[in-house]
Length: 408
Ligand code: SF4
Image (cartoon, rainbow, N blue to C red; front, side, top):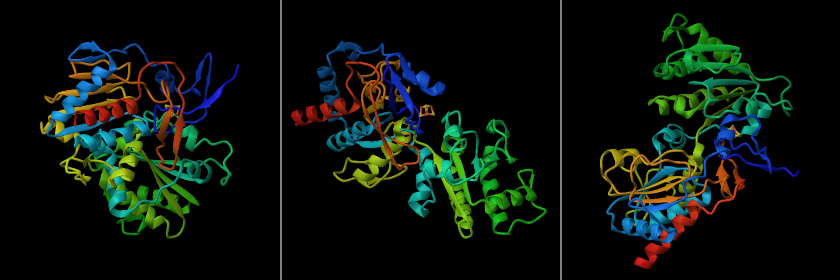
């Protein structure tokens, strides 16, 4: 029986070695992918005010709601690139704010890139070259189940002869279940102190008798020596493991990398962007010039990380219409007084009633598409592995744009 290679859309590792056959999907042992490809397809009815309606009526109701709004917001997660591009076009047409959900978490990484640059690498570079890897802040495996298989346990590396040595800096309770050559345990709210101490140790400015969050200075000196001795060091973190001071942590990591690159090679690999949130950021960047928190209400893109943060706008009650997109994620729309148009995958249960509920297919499961991988260097094609009549986010967003045009 023929098996075709497919890409998994269920985390930002975007593993492209899965196999689809008549009997189902071989998920290479990944439980998260197995759960994703087994998602329920049961909810297919579109609704307006709770009553089932044809798709065209739901689209018209969504357009009417958006056209009457003074400040609509488009947010959420989980569309393929075509869907995100159509949402940006819709935001432009409707004069809306558009922002990936939880963009303040993603911002811990990209704000540093905006202000100071970055020293990053691809998955392939880390898998083939890294001889020392420092894991920061917690175990990335719960969010990215095959991360060690993909980046550490490469059995046929091109440019190193032994597996990379692993080190860890972060809370003991969140430490990866792997053998570590070195480990420094400190609370997540002291992680900034930890990376600052590592930077000071590398620069020869850490007093020998210093105590950092209960850890003696010698541990940081030893960790710095480890990274300095590597031919190709990598510092890897899951952005969701960083606390609210995550931006300062990432900025300090960049200083560490700059210091290391005076004598050897060292890179940072931030993991973020599941549910194609990174695709959302990339599409916004290339279409508006800004990565997130963008308003298209004034006829030209305007960026403000505070004013146009989706979560803040909802919490402050500043919007009068919400278009929530969850084609990949499992998330129902957040609570808001604003009337909501919800574009939802067929397995998402609504806790309340949305003004307009439109069921959409899951990219990579119900329809083809494209998804940006966490290292942001490649957009991978997605296939469909089951049959559905549900429209894609792109088709629905385009239909709403057309309906808005017809209304005008
Ligand atoms: S690690 Fe992520 S992308 Fe890879 S198979 Fe598992 S869920 Fe899919």
